[in-house]
Length: 164
Length: 368
Image (cartoon, rainbow over all chains, first blue to last red):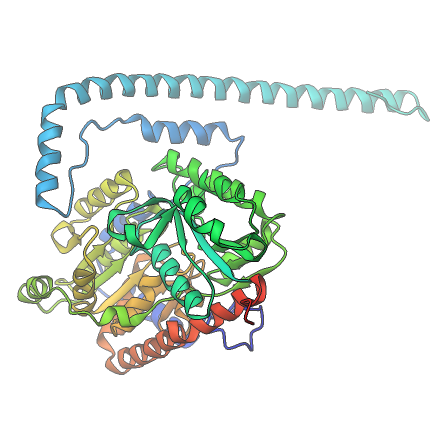
């Protein structure tokens, strides 16, 4: 359908448009604040709930962010050998459980090795990131020193154009 | 134009993409176009509904005038199948269902994240050559435009609510009503995937139980896209002490799905990425009030038919649900608004819009 708000499109507000029911949202916000200030409100539990939700926040690193890449690798380094056996079908679940039991010793062996490799890689990644950050700091210091020297050279020779 | 054939990498039949193909095919045939569904992989239960590309090339394409044939490709994931379709030499237009932002999967399934990035690259490569591009929502259309698609249209998904008139699974209804107590029944339907943010629903639910309703229960219906994320959700339920009140019902039959809708009090979505959001409409169809975080295409799907939230702090979600549960006039108002919304997006209303759009972008039938 064309991008015409008057067209009988049936689609809702375009992106960025104000959300409907602002009064109801304001009422909800006020009620939430009121609930949180009532005596007996489970403050500590709510803090725990909020902290738990935050742990799920999706990383959105820049492609050149080495530390973020290492953090993600670290997240995956805990290799879980227990394959999920959930299924809506009882027969499938039973079959999966049987297979998991049969290959458990093998899975654990591989998971152990894979985990070790992952942790070693995290170690290398951390070391590389640390070295690169050190080098970046050194380059910044050197650049600052060059700028200082250029400024000084310019002051010693008035009228001369400082070059690099 | 005499033929508009639809192509997709994998035809599962009853999912949102599969249903869209089936309904669009029926529309096109009804309007006098030749129209087939062609897929890279076809699920066994819908084998009679679709062609493989080889069979299509041998049996169907020779019967069509190539000058008068268009390929409508359903784009929801990157796939080498697209290259095979473009190799046919037909003009290719797309219906864009949406590709989830990869960053949601980086932590849980890097391989999936990589596939999603590849999909977006493939989509952008198509920008210059696509004959037309139709998006399921304005949100998705904006993505197409940002990738360089110049001529875009928006036609929502074709949802035929007549399909929901079938009887609900009585065993599920019985099980849920027999064990039902005074507490509210929360429901979310959608794949267990990090972009759907089921963790935020659990957080809101935990707050709701702690502050408003000790006996409330929450059910998630939907298969697992990410096992690692699903396990983390289970761990979170345990950590917050709500394991006994939360059910992960997995992928269920259509009749069981109807039963879950019919036995729920509120549909709660905290999703951060929806290209459209069919379950939101399903909930409205079953008079289940919708409380949803207003992300991506959610606001344009829900419209005035539910309560949209600008943030999803656990207390905001919990209090919003509490207001809906305890304020009967508000509940009735939301249900009525939901019905209107469903009506405005019904297949009867959107079908002709889809047909008209396809006529405009692909060309009318030879008969006019």
